[in-house]
Amino acid sequence: MTLLDGKKTSNDLKEEIKASVDLRKTTGKKTPHLAAVLVGTDGASMTYVNSKVKACEYVGFSSTLLDMPADTSEATLLEKIEGLNNDPDIDGYIVQLPLPKHIDEQKVLMAVNPDKDVDGFHPTNVGRMTLDMPCFLPATPYGILELLERYKVETAGKHVVIIGRSHIVGRPMSILMSQKRPAGNATVTVAHSRTSNLKELCLQADIIVAALGIPEFLTGDMVKDGVTIIDVGITRVEDTSKKRGYRLAGDVDFKSVSPKAAFITPVPGGVGPMTIAMLLKNTLLACERRD
Amino acid sequence: MTLLDGKKTSNDLKEEIKASVDLRKTTGKKTPHLAAVLVGTDGASMTYVNSKVKACEYVGFSSTLLDMPADTSEATLLEKIEGLNNDPDIDGYIVQLPLPKHIDEQKVLMAVNPDKDVDGFHPTNVGRMTLDMPCFLPATPYGILELLERYKVETAGKHVVIIGRSHIVGRPMSILMSQKRPAGNATVTVAHSRTSNLKELCLQADIIVAALGIPEFLTGDMVKDGVTIIDVGITRVEDTSKKRGYRLAGDVDFKSVSPKAAFITPVPGGVGPMTIAMLLKNTLLACERRD
Image (cartoon, rainbow over all chains, first blue to last red; front, side, top):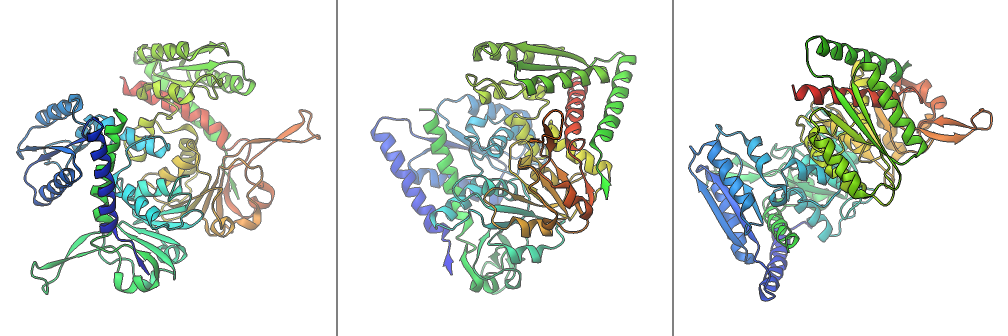
């Protein structure tokens, strides 16, 4: 069993990005600049945004945090977005979700200039992805492709079962892995809450991507020997034996599944760390496109 | 075995659209107006465009055919496109493919205003479809959904195998049938040229959509009893017993498959006739959106 080490791989990626940025600076090219928009003071959102800003600093990007109060009006937010769209120094930006309830999230995401949409959430980017055109790939699926590729997990002609059809993980994964591309060319099945024979399907799978958000859902009796497991889930599960009162659980029961797996991502330290690295990679790409 | 009769269903649809147009006219609303752009004199393209124009007339739409010579420059074509985008009377339009080789097809399709893109080919429409937002669905997949729905073929929780991953049929079908929607909620597998165990997969399928473009590829030994078959293929196969020297063949060997099928589309007269009907439906929708 080989661990697909997202922490190590994301560190490798950050070093590569840092080297590219250093080279840009010594050759007089523009320094990539990522902005993050945060509305309100949600604890998890603040943690995510801060770690993104820190990652930017590490690789040598410029970064801007637009920190707005929770009662910011939709109109004011849209004005800020327009400002970011028109600011020639900003290469890419993200709007940290969720937004406060009085703001129409979809309206805000639609206002982001697709050329600066480094989260890859705008319909134009999603359409370009679906049509296999140049685009910004959403960070989590992009990170999974990168992990599979760097660990040389064979995907062509393999049967991949993706559990979950969310817009940010399940759906894009299913599209990308069945396209002609590295970590692609797989036969892909999308399973979800309405799937009737999930165990039977999973037992056939060469690769399983679990992205349904139910802790330890996938158990050892549901997978075949030699399977590759990508665990996208990350849920806080009460655990009184821990000082903080909880532990982080994936969608996969690591204990029973890992003995049968050829490759498996741990939680934490698997898919999660890859996500920020791919956001940096998209920002570098956005900057390079404007050279 | 029940034939999924595309000819009859498309006629029903046309009557419904005609009734909506009549009602619009008697209530003083705008008459839907579809334009078609044809470059060159390719025989098949002319036939398709003419049948689209005829269908428009039948349901009471206004229609415009922009017929341009084969040596039209890309710049001139893009000017025409811009003109259609800006013409307030045009609700939707299509650019008949293929275009002559000296014209960049992708560049032309990108120039179509997504709000008038009734073919549903623009990345913004494809992205909106992928994200399950309001959009123009591409006509062939839309027609298949409509057929399945009108014949009350159960899809929720069923296993659908889609053979082919093209941008205009296989890919959108796989996305749409796994979404929460009528004729959706299915467990969907996308198979293609790199799939290694196609027969095994097909034998498990409750519904098979054959869209690979190889005449009579799917045979009776590859399907289980009670399967539903959607045959998207239509290829001219040499046949000296026919006066015109060929016959039209689908991707399915109807003779061996139909005895095992619960529902099956014939070729011709199945998926094909639905396509034009859905183009009309999209145009009506485009017009209604501008009311």
